[in-house]
Length: 263
Length: 222
Ligand SMILES: Nc1ncnc2c1ncn2[C@@H]1O[C@H](COP(=O)(O)OP(=O)(O)O)[C@@H](O)[C@H]1O
Ligand SMILES: [Mg+2]
Image (cartoon, each protein chain N blue to C red):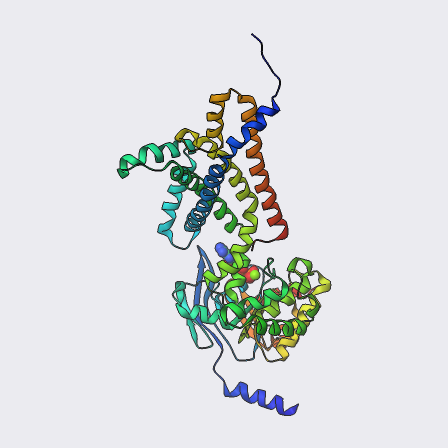
């Protein structure tokens, strides 16, 4: 037990270069300046939670990391590949997406495919894994997120919480080096939030690098290595959860936290 | 002078063998035309919404031209007009198939466009985020879902095109209506013969409807 902890820590220090680095990333939607020269690095194995009011640019920020949103200037490095402004990333775009998994607010499962096929599609088509191998991987992952018995069903036959756990398994099937989460529990009924957060917590404990946009402050405090507060397309403040939640320095952070932590 | 308003079933049945000689032509024009029209529709429908901007204009022009002119005029143009340009006659059957293909293709382009655009943006994003290339995302994620949604509209277009082939008697293709006209000219049994022709069309269109609803229900597409 102790051994594995030390070796994991040794790994982290040995590989000190960040897995994600945003370098003066700038993005506009028309007149709206949604990302204002954002600098942000994420270390291997780090769990970064991004918080901020609705419309502050959290989704845009993480969607830039896997190239779902183009940006206008700056650059983004993900695991040694560089995303360039204005969609000029070339081959590295595909390479980045292959190594970065994403879980969406609305799950976005493929409704025409069975749960198992949702999980196996990308490994088969992108990695060239055989159907048998892919099925074995899928069954293991579905078991890990607690829905092994639903593999032959279709997405609409599952509850929201189950669907989101399938979405997580689907992303993990590509063995990503980094996982992005965009409000993974916001579309869920309250009683299903816990099961999804549990699966994410387990993933964090396994050492996955994660960037998470969420309004679940309790979860953020518990799981995050670092919390980043975004406002108006800028990173206003960041730090370890205890510091950011208990001693926010910036008044915008204080105002935001007093609003969301009230209830 | 005495009129006989009686429907003569025997005359109706007697016309069948002759009428049925037209059935293969009706079916051939319909299904060959629709099959080619489907390919044209996919091509132009995707050009219209694809990433390549300069391909959009030809698609728009094609759809507007062939949707905005009568299929009868189209087939007359192809059969009587085109030979002047090409310097040689065009087979009537070929002209009929071409007219259905081009006409249905225009409508199917719009069906394809609508079907593909109806798929939620998140589906594409999920596919891309998994590392599927844009073409793979289209092929495995968007298209199967779009195709299933397109079935009712495609069935509709199929029925319209099958009925449109009845106009092609004017260029002398021996399809159902043409056969009927020839038969009536000799027997003066218009009531019975057109009734039988109507029944034959209904049999074709109902079979198509049935086949498509089975396909839709069983999810055999996609
Ligand atoms: N495709 C788009 N076109 C125009 N404006 C957009 C688009 N997507 C997001 N925005 C705007 O950008 C801002 C940031 O959006 P988003 O990143 O979704 O914020 P958050 O996730 O923090 O709620 C919002 O004001 C939003 O309205
Ligand atoms: Mg958002």
